[in-house]
Image (tube, rainbow, N blue to C red; front, side):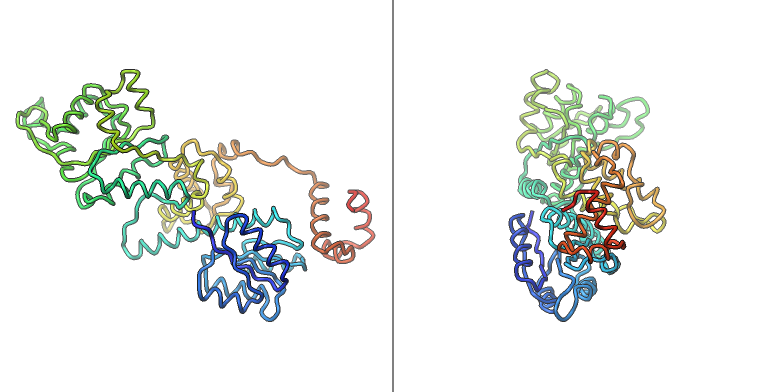
Length: 443
């Protein structure tokens, strides 16, 4: 995946260079500036995915910069950092559109986590904007959505295979989008102006499969008052996709093998050979080599189909694509009555932890369900299926004392150990703070 560009705005040399070094170690491309004015100049010259800005800056403040960024670059996310932590400034930053708020001195792990979450949110927003633009322009889009490294590699292979006039075998778990891969191959091939025809080999009896594939002549069987073309004939010049090819009955495997070898076929009840020029793409969620060894799939047909093999990765290995896919489905299924414009960070966190046994198809169903049940415009955790909650390991619930102890430590750290300022931020007197520090054994 392409390294994201991040702009760091801080007038403290050590602070900005430390953040830059941390982000470089994580594979990002950071740029550092000292003032909000310099940040605006940098933003006018190139696009950044994320801006990390100090709140207190010379001249224009971090809040003012945040407001201008929201206008200049709506797709960018902003993280606000400060050594002057108060509830009021945190609330104000979030109201102005900041993704999150981090107190100094920075906790490195917290910074890394917030950067990842901010970029996930940004990926979702960018995908929605891209889709809306393409829809407005009336331009078609390739059906495969995502930019993770495995998916980019798959897209590259698809582009190569599309230019080759050979049979293709697609392997992948149920719900990974094997038909979308087949459609992408067709759309990028020289046959894209011709028909793309799909048939699921597991949904037809042998007799029906015969008629669907090859068509039939007039009076070939009872009730056939007229002849009819089959899928192979209709798709001549185009692409035929055989989904779940492992379910194809053995006698139909023989007939398909003949078509691949001879490039012609007979209609049911016919005597005249019909030539056909098609690209065959087949898909399976089983191991065809094992099916061959078990005698359930013909070895010669396997070799004919397996000229080029593409493996579609499961969604659990494409975590970077989940925010983008959510944005894609929200845009795809939105209507005037059912529309969600944003997704909460908690919802996104849960989806990122979920294993998705049903792969992309399951995520698509989850988004459709959320749209149907939503009472507002935000995708909140309550809209997720209960099984998603159960399978995601949640942190054990904390006691009130645990929460208070952690919060006191955080504020004390942000105030650099100054107990008077810490007590002010917490809204208690210094004596009460002293008692709590003693109670929780906080140094």
